[in-house]
Image (tube, rainbow, N blue to C red; front, side, top):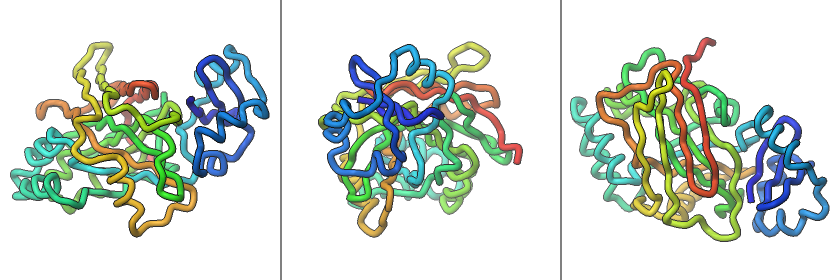
Length: 283
């Protein structure tokens, strides 16, 4: 089942019906057994027609986040390690990424507060002081305050490869700025863990023409999802849970950089499609 956050309320979509859930988002999602809670509570939720639900999703969709922080994991796929080594070779930092890929401890970093997160159909930004910008499509975990993975969404970890390539210590500037993260279109809450054969696809469109298109299965990830969640929660408390982007294997060629007006389309099996247009921060 899928939970959409809309301007009209929290919308639950099951296989054949839609229901509106009149609850605070944080209180709704931050619980153990979220799937069972939603399944058992359907009869008490107010039903909404499919026509109305489609209209709400089309015209009032918000990112599925309220008070949660967004974190990210890096170098979890071999291709990501290669790309990070390529961008850092001139600064002498290439070995850092090879070491992280093979280390016991994963790379985890803070990505965004809720007010900097875009939803489906909203813009994502590239930095004006960066010359090499890319989207990073990522399976994103929703982990409740108890450290348990309860759901999944599509994530876009917008990144400045030119800034990070100058010096690995510039990672926060390469990763954290206004609308540098996108989540959506929903929170997918399955009964069991997500299938390892789940496919992530990304397409970048410029002036109506596809500039890049590729896909990968999440089974290509070196680290397990529970491993990443465990490391994040070892020394951090998240009162309302958190979101954790799990890394990417889809990296455009080194001669490609995003431009204002480009459209980034990321789809993950069972979850849905996240679509964003690239812009600049105007203050």
